[in-house]
Length: 164
Figure 1 (spheres, rainbow, N blue to C red):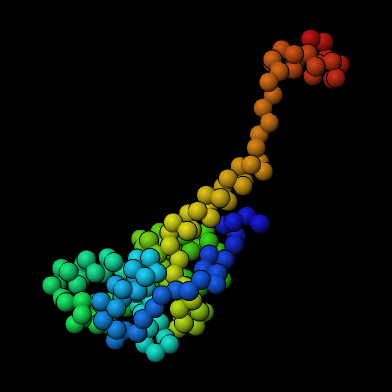
Figure 2: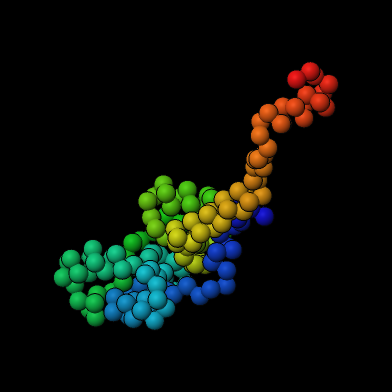
């Protein structure tokens, strides 16, 4: 199967996506990001997805606004209701959504748009797209003859009974 026709759910698989309640403090999010070695986490209200918090938000909001991570809730600094993809989109379609919104990552939400299933990153999509192109090139390689053109013409003329 060509990788670009694979669905987004292949990328997110059964991996755990770090998430916190919106009432959690920024410092909690930073600890979780460090623990799971990620740059973005999901933010929920009870079990419903409400937004994302990333290291970019830390720099552009928390630090720039001189907020204290131990006293600032995620609700105050998250990106509410960001663009998202669903698991039934193809990798190519998800890539196009990211390009359209100019995001490096997007949440993958259930078809109802309420439950966070994972977070897909541009680098993962590109890996699949690159692999797809490599597979295509390998399976559709062009065979180039190394015979001199004159010999090829003589052989053709002989088989077609054309005087050469």
